[in-house]
Length: 163
Image 1 (cartoon, rainbow, N blue to C red):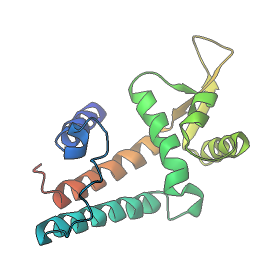
Image 2 (tube, rainbow, N blue to C red):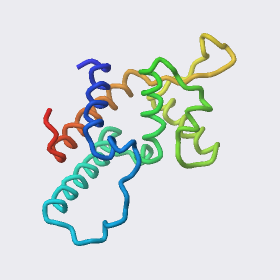
Image 3 (cartoon, rainbow, N blue to C red):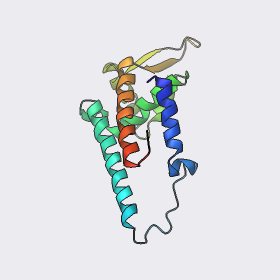
Image 4 (cartoon, rainbow, N blue to C red):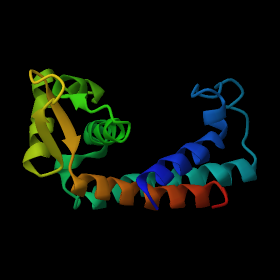
């Protein structure tokens, strides 16, 4: 499967999910306190298992290293890869802003750690030699594509979405 096919498959799969069709807005909370039917509880249990598997797989993808904790690094690494796939690499500052937590120094340290560990490459922007851009390495792309492929299959199974 090519990267482009994978991205198209993910977009198609996500478009089938109710929360995605709802324009990315969370479903309303009112009425959720009523007793839940067994079928709904079962679907939510399957979904929580898929989410838990997603987090476990991410940790295993990075060798179980606490240095690459899901919440702190997911936005940065996946954001860098998505920008690369779109042909719009991010500057160091833009990549730092993709992270949801941490001071500027903490964010810069995370980027440096990912560069030092061989997941990201910092280089001068060919169009504007003054800016530094960040690109994923082939190793990072392979790791994330593997992770997303495995977890997409788990999620599809949990939500009974056919292949």
